[in-house]
Length: 194
Ligand SMILES: [Zn+2]
Ligand SMILES: [Zn+2]
Image 1 (cartoon, rainbow, N blue to C red):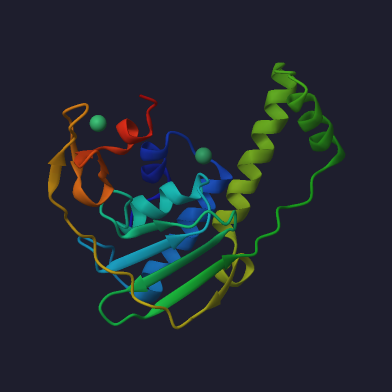
Image 2 (image 1 turned 180 degrees about the horizontal axis):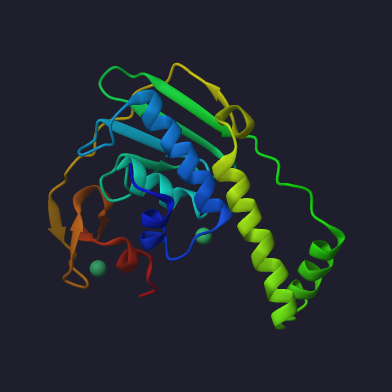
């Protein structure tokens, strides 16, 4: 399994969100087995935070492969489904951050107010590191509420033929094309004012 640092190479930095996604994805793989070389595993994520980058790198469920589904609910919930069995795991993150000290609260308020002095940055950075460590060291039961719901198996990614847009000349996937005066056009051209 990839380490958090390896995942950070993709994401760009290490942060508490990435750590949450890392733990959720790691747990899912432990429960459901093997990362997804093709589309054996499907991930449904309910937010688009830093965490979902870790989910993609660790599980192999990626936006581009179509086995990574984003539902814009703003929730820290990750559902994984194994194909073809349909075995599913719903992981709801229920982690509580360690209590902030007064010094940390004060530094954070200053930081949000635009203060980037060494002193403030140091406290803010330390607080972030503490959070990451707390997430990485926590037991699964401290981090997640897990259920095994019955879910409908999402359909596999489909490949569609392309048609050429009669306005801009670029190719567009057929189901996304629109008709204008009986000719196929892409959505940006369809929506553009004439
Ligand atoms: Zn991040
Ligand atoms: Zn066009």
